[in-house]
Length: 93
Image (tube, rainbow, N blue to C red; front, top):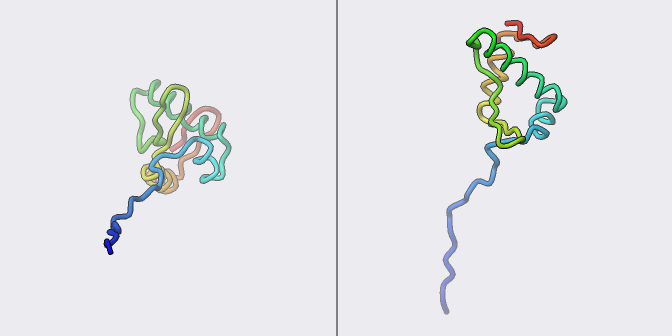
């Protein structure tokens, strides 16, 4: 009888990127709130020429945003530690 070989290798199918909807659900925010955070940080970067701290970790492909799961945790930790506030189109650090 032939012996069946079984692979001991398990490939993780965990997604490294979240859609904006998945990130919003994870953070308990609306998609619009996440887009506002991205927009606010981008305005500050453009206006001041720099941004102090870690920016929201996204990439944009076409019209879709994707958020790095690993970098999202870094952003959450730093933003919380700094007690960063997003209000009226500006970032208060």
